[in-house]
Length: 119
Image (cartoon, rainbow, N blue to C red):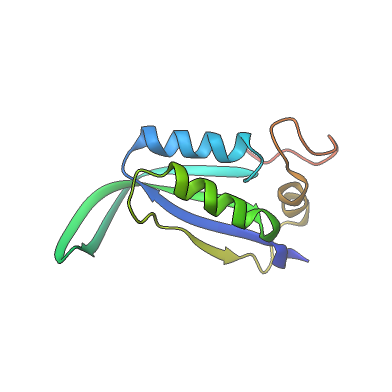
């Protein structure tokens, strides 16, 4: 039943805010894993002007059951006035990895039998 696993996307203005958000979400058990991908260039309209800015893309793995708390925490900590957060359902994947995402809680959480993700 992979449909309870989500991949969420968010962007941050730089490495420091991306790292802080990623570490908080994982440490608080709101995400099993967060990838921080520097080098994104976002082009967007904001307050009547066209912008093109470097950002760090966060790829967040969580479950539908943790999503609302993740959303609240991300919005509370994010430096943007209107932070990006979109959730995409996982329709299929490597079953042991999806089981690990489901079993993940706070650091040191889970039952200790779930496999570790690849680095």
